[in-house]
Length: 284
Image (cartoon, rainbow, N blue to C red; front, side):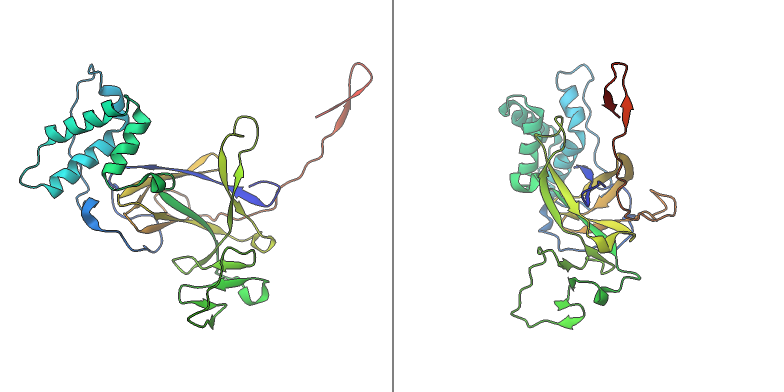
């Protein structure tokens, strides 16, 4: 949250098969791609490597992804599966990348059907304001739901509504919230000026309202996500199956105590002048 009516978040994903059951509260949404790279078993085969091996460091870093690739090969080649062969193929990918761990990861994901484009945005994150208690009709906005209705009124089949305009919003997949608009901006400050931040725009009518997040997995891999809000980890392990979605809410007993996230106005503070030893003024 900051003073210009925007909100920032960050998230990270692991390529490990989603552990445990679906325990991020909310509806599962979206249609999955083909299931060639999906595994129903929640346990991946352990890969052993000597800690003194020259490969120990990068294989530990990419361990979940390596295990996933071995498991996929076992699923697709039941009769001819050879874990050692797959590991040799992975070693060749590593050498071919010039022993670059980041490039090796990208190549492994490509071999599992995840394009470079999708790798740049594996999980789509949407911030939504709760609809409960919100009188949409009294607001200067149009909410388009999943049944092609605008503020409850049927739209003609050939009418396309641009939900990226300021006063038009898309209803969330679980139909319990309204998506807020996002924009990409340069990072703030010298340390982040080279970065591009995804910023959520907070309209005045959303102030004082509770909110939550919707995560959608754009890849063909089952992912496990963690999420940080204002530097605090708010979700440790949100399973997001391939092509599907999950909601992250603060009243999920596994991750949070029972409470709500509520948008509040930013506090604006003026710099105060103080007298300096030389007779001038300094600002603090």
